[in-house]
Structures are given as C-alpha cells and as structure tokens.
Image 1 (tube, helix red, strand yellow):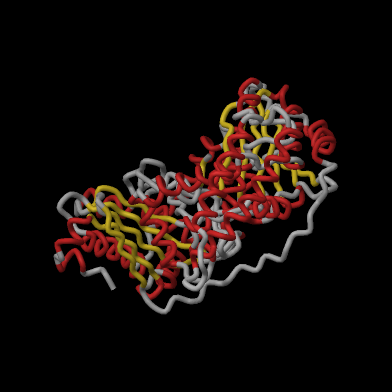
Image 2 (tube, one colour; image 1 turned 90 degrees about the vertical axis):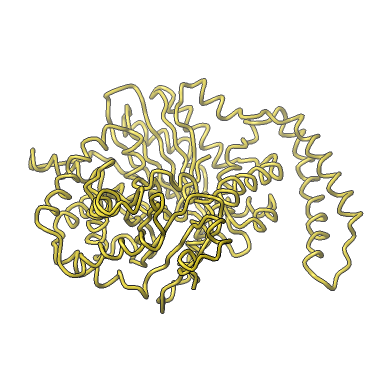
Length: 538
C-alpha cells in the first residue's frame, strides 16, 4: 500500500509526488491547479466552463462528487476519509496508516472461510496479547520485576493462536475479487491530512463495488492484526530506518515542527507501531471511518441519478458518527535557524524548509508561483532558476527542486538538492540562498510570469484525460477547501499574481530565522572530522 508521507520521497528530486497530504513538497503546480488550469484554458476558448460535477450528500452525511464521462465503459472511484497522521494520538503515531492496512483484511464475509469459527480465536488472541503487553510494559521501569518466563510463554501462545486462525483466513480475497471484476489500480494511501482508497473498474461492475465497499465500511474484521503490525514495522525499517532519504526526511520534519503533529512520521515511530492493539485501531476506525467523515468521487461512465440511488441503497444505512473536536497544536513562531545532520553511507543531500501558511491563505498563491519559477513550470523542465543556476551554470548540483504543498495546516516551502560530484553541501546551500535573494531584490520578469500562466493552461489539458486523476483532484479540493469549486478560485488568483507579490513573499518568509536545514552526509565525511564537512552542525 502506498504511503504518501514517506513513500517516493525521491529520487527524481524535481517531481515529488506527495499530493494533498502533506509532507513532501508540491514542486510543480498543485493538483487543484492542474484541474483548474484546464478550466481556464477552456474558458479562454468558450467563455464558459463547467466540470459537470454533480454533488450530493446522503442522509448520513456521505459526500458524493460525480462526473459523467462516457468516453469508455470505465468508472474511477476515489473514497477519501478526513483523517490522517495529524489525528494520531500521542503514543499511537501511525495508527491511521495501520488502519489503512487493516481495511484490506476483509469483512465477516470476505477474507474468511468461517467468521464464526475464527471469532473466538481472535478474542483469545486479544486477551493473550493484553497479558503479554502488560508484562512487557514492566521493562520500561527500573522498579518493576519482569517475569521473562511468562513473556516467553505468552509469546508462544500468541504464535499458536495466530497459526490456528490462519486456517480460516482466505488471503487477498478482496483484491482477487476486484481483479476478477476487471478492476485496475486498486490501492490506498495515508497522508498527514487524509486517507484514501481508489481503483478503476468496468462501469457495469459499479454496483458490486458499492456492495463490497459498504461491507468494508460497516463490517471490517481486523484479522491477522499482529502479523500485519509486524509488516508495518518492516515497512518502516525499509523505507526509513535503513533508507537515507527516508531517514533524512523524518529527521528534517521532526526538526522543523516541534509542536504541530506534522513532526510525526505518518508511518509512526517504531515503538508506537510495536504497541498498537486491535481494540485501539478498531476504536479509531469507529470514530473516523464514518460516512459523514468521507468524500466519494465517482468519475466515468455513470448516470448520476442512478448512482445516487445506488449509493443510498448500500451506504445509506451506515450510521453517521459524532466527530470529535479536532484541536491541533499550533506550531510556535520559529525564533532562529534549525539544523539537523543525518550521517549515512549514501550520496549527500540537502533539504531547506521555510514555514509558510496553509492552503487557501492569500500568501500561498504567490508562493506557488515562486516555486514554479524556481523549479521550472513544466514537468521535466530545465527552465527553473535553480536548475539553470546550480546544475547548468555553476555545476554544483546534480538536481534541485522547490515548492510547497496543499495542506490543511501551515506547512513548509521546501528546496531540495543533491550536490554534484566533488561539490560540498555548503556550496549548494550558498547557491540556493543566492537565487532566493534575487527574488528579494527584484521581482520576476513579466516574461517569467507569462510562462507560468501559459504552463498552467497547457498542463490542465493533459490532467483531465484521466478519470482517476479527476476523481482524486475534486475529492482532494473538497477535503482541503470544503468545496470542489475552489479549483476555479485558485487558478484565478494564481494567474493574477504579480511580480511584486512574489518579491514580497520572498522577503516575508525566506529569512534565516524561519528556515530549517537538513543535511544527509556520507559517513566518511563525518568520520574524517573535516571542518568543511562539519561546519553546518549547530
């Protein structure tokens, strides 16, 4: 399963793929801009644009966004829940991601040869684990005596019970069922701000999808829980603990944010993962995986009226849940530059982040334009100021990117770069600051701004070719902005940005006091004690 916050952290540094969610930067235009720019392009041609989104809210609060497109007998589905890593309780970081994994374990009818037969075994597993956890917890205190023999016996009993449960498990029945239906792209992702499940399938199988997904929402069974918890722990080990890029990103986020939960990895800290219980994840599910906390985008060969009736038939009986007040700790103003160094046997890398406002703030439009000017306005472009300067002219970097992210809460504008062979991180960092200072001294040219506007229009034509892309975009905007129509507002305001506004944002946010710097240094450099290689450690 795809995890937005740490998967695909790079290697193509110009094209981070984190989307609504919030960890990695959006170095091109936002997903909203991609869909809205096509609207702007069409508007220029036809004076009228309509995405033909039919929106409807079921009686239980489930939000439906439907786009009727009969180009092919295919429908793309994107179900998004308004819960992510920011909602994980302290001590249970990563629980939203763990829940995403468990949602593929089936229901009372899917994934089991006999739910009645396995239920008492699962209950015994929960009881045994509660005893095991209680005894293990004593290890955290120097004043309690730990019964290691008891721990060993309970671990053996856990193994025996899990093996007994395996006799009832039908592995991957959900995915195999969808495969037989002709579905493609079945996957899910967890981000800091949301969790989403998506696939495309023949439109004549839409009602089967509704039956399956309503069953998953109403009757999930978190079978093989503790075995899957070990899988998640291994996922973390491979993507973060033993991955230089993942480890740098995690330490960088934890340094840039000290109060806001964006500081926590979406996969969770290792000790938290190791202590989840099935009951805890089930309670989390009951709270947040409610119809009134979900958005479903359905794009393709559909009849909206019939689709609404179908959704009411299968999802309408699932009760809404009272949503808790979501107070998220504000990140205090940063009083000075922060730095973190990660030593690893790997190629050096650099991350520089500046605190900026959340999506929808008036300053974000000029910041988005600045990101496009620094990185280049089109995918694969070498026209960005940073690439021209650092890679082509000064030859101090192999690659460089810059940009921000559409997120619910204030986040970071991030510049990332990989030093060229024989060049130091310090040289790359200095060159980046020089390019930022140019924006502070004088605004971008009219020609540069025109390229941004033109690129927005051109990119959108490609963006709407995919039903799945449209579904993802309109659901994401609905979640972040509260109304999918905000895509029009963003494109209008972004295309109206002036050079003076970009210059003002460069002065307002890109100060040494507001930045966090993360360095990935080869172990050899750390061990050498070379003053140049150590100068960034503060």
